[in-house]
Length: 398
Ligand code: FEO
Image 1 (tube, protein in one colour):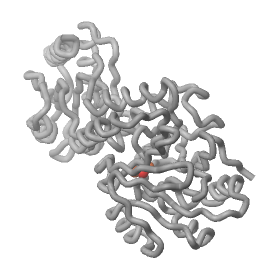
Image 2 (cartoon, protein in one colour):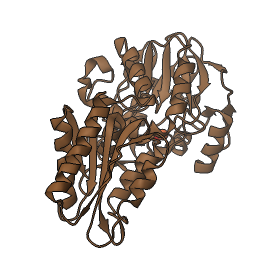
Image 3 (cartoon, rainbow, N blue to C red):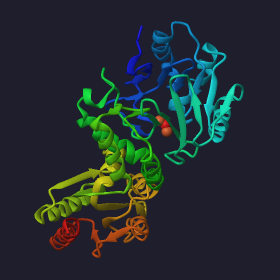
Image 4 (cartoon, rainbow, N blue to C red):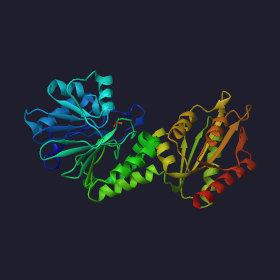
């Protein structure tokens, strides 16, 4: 039998680790797995905070029952209805028929839409407190982080905020649940990738949520994915979120290209060479056909300089570049230096048009020189591309 893990007095981690799903949201790779964290408060009233994916219900129930020994659960607090946290609701109802689902009006509507569940619910308002006995949960709406119904639950006697997706990370938990009992190197990188893929588009809302949270005396952050943050880890992860949501960048460059026969790849190497020769040390070059989009967007999110290159394909941009451009646009990436370049044989301009459309949107500092190569870069083209790298380096390092 799996057991619950203590978080604080009478507060338990009862989550599960998923090391078999390849793609989170069926989109984003999971090389280290992912955890679905749920928490149990064992008080006069017993409350579960957020749930797990339905296929892990057996493990989930083992951890819950390791504490309750057959006693019922009174409340399921739903901070966010996305099914990675809510799809076990029907199963929970079967085991605990008297459980009351607690959330805001919009979340309860979503629960009904997904699961047809509308009986035994309790609607709570922003700022309302639920008394469990010794523990008190106050609910705070953080709309669009990253769904409109999203809220957090703050337990005032311990200073624990149950933050759901906010401050979450990819990566399954490997025994330890707290940030100070594991190597955070991988998790910090995975928090960045989680942020860029899932939350980045809603950075303005994250800033509003951080402002709201700054009024709370938070001692511990219990997210629904990844490690729990306590001690110095609280300020660290809040600072990381603040930086990510303000789109702060490093003096680095990310180059992404779409290339059929290597000629556009060669152009990307020339830009990288120009960057390196002019002092940029942190450069990532990705082939859009083989690279993982989540890694690309994670590095785009941190880089001051972005270069996008495409060869021509069927009188348009190379297909593998479309998801890259779409994700960059969808995430509202801004405040970056951008270089674009293309390669064609008989259809000048077709390959670069979507890149020009992206560059025309607000928030980009476009490098003036837009190099278009005919089939294969000449020495003059190579020099022009190295000069693009040099111009970009100047702006990155300024
Ligand atoms: Fe972890 Fe938005 O669900």
